[in-house]
Image 1: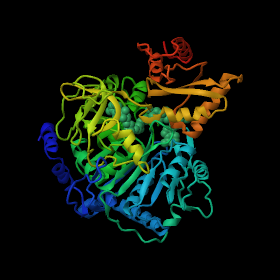
Image 2: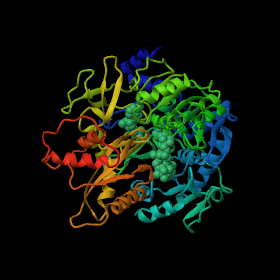
Image 3: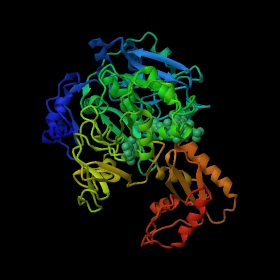
Image 4: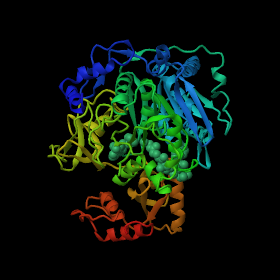
Length: 629
Ligand code: COA
Ligand code: AMP
């Protein structure tokens, strides 16, 4: 069957399509139906099935003769370590860790925050939670204490599992003080913390609260897999919305297993036993789905890479890992390729390695710009497949399903809708626009299995963010077009979310930090185009009357505040002090116009602008930092 047939079979009978996909999963009790629409427009999948994620990702492969196969290859150019963990070893390690968590009182439904770097123990912690039905929430290591505290208060974890440190090139990220700071800041306190002491940094434990990763597992009874309902939350993953309060995306167990397993062959074209590598971080959705769960569920070997595309030690790192570990399909963000291209434009490092094992490169997380895609294609001589999805959706929604049929690539478009989706473009009033016209990208409800059923503790926000504006549809928050061949072109966000080096950030969250500076009366943050990272945040601040401190000091302080409160990942280094911000007569800040000025693009003067002269002041300010040329 080609793509058209597969897509048509889903469209004709979505229930049967997903029930058939569910056959590939080991259920403790098979679901009798796929969709549960009893609470529409909130939908759930496989609600009457009973299943365990860890069993499907680990134990069943041991039972089925894959015990000796590597489940995880850990490759860390930062620590000069390489290590393989077989499925059998992984099963034993995870069962013991799960047993230790259980012995400390963690039960089905309890939340556990995981704050760890790119090491195999992070995956083990995730799987151990899944094994006993605990709900994990992994927090990216590049977030600071305050962001961790917000997540602690939102998901109220019984335990936190953390490492002593993370390692960035040339810098140790001291997790422990960040963790202690977060717990102090948070209203909710976990019962206990498990600390994995890395040899690069051994931290001090808090007596009565912290236990040592190794010590607390000593002598415990390994835990068995606990079957959970199909709609039991597997995890919560926080992502940026338009305010400082992140959205807790909930992932339900049954749909997650079914959908992720389906994607491994159909999208990524790998068979069980093949090595799959997603060079991202477990703190992001790509890491959840394609470093941890999907490859393991499907019986693939996954690579846990602790390093960067450049500088660890050189722009040949990716090629070394692919060649050395026999990687079949490789997934990363375009920004990583831009980083390599900048350092090695002629691809000289690539020539040092035999990459004949690699069949396709997959790019996602941000727009795949044609320059980068073409460069990667010329360099590697294999298909470069752009695909589109979001934390909310959990796996590719728009793609080019190489395992079914590789469709003609249109560079700049992530290709076509996958089963489960039927993308339309609507105008602001909710009317469907003809093909080729730009508007809000939506897809009809219900969303397929494996997508978010709701937001943690925030059903009203879920409805408001995704369902209310266009009844009957899920609003993606992206703007774009669907062309005459059904290819989707993603052009921009429709909200205040920006994408920095493939990381999703909220300009609203950065504004909240700037506004907290005592000298700042008003501010706006926009995302400007950056050659390497795609976008970079730039802050504009108007000072409180009477403040006459040196502007450089205030800029420095606000940059430090953002790093301290949100974290280094915000990459907030550019801030400008201006007298006024451009606004409409009703007081709305004209951020989109400011972005156009920064990027030296043409724009229409907004009809409702209060005072057009302010735009010249903004342009002059931007020129001082190399923008608005
Ligand atoms: N823990 C602590 N700090 C982290 C971190 C982590 N896990 N990840 C990044 N940071 C820090 C970086 O060290 C950097 O700090 P600095 O300001 O002191 O230099 C800051 O956060 C910004 O990070 P980033 O924007 O990622 O820039 P970078 O220079 O470290 O790396 C790339 C640039 C392009 C190499 C890198 O962004 C990359 O590989 N991106 C891939 C994208 C990706 O994985 N996206 C996920 C979705 S697919
Ligand atoms: P995240 O939830 O962090 O994965 O970010 C999702 C957002 O990243 C999407 O809503 C898009 O704005 C953007 N995005 C992800 N993949 C692509 C892609 N292939 N092309 C264009 N934009 C993308």
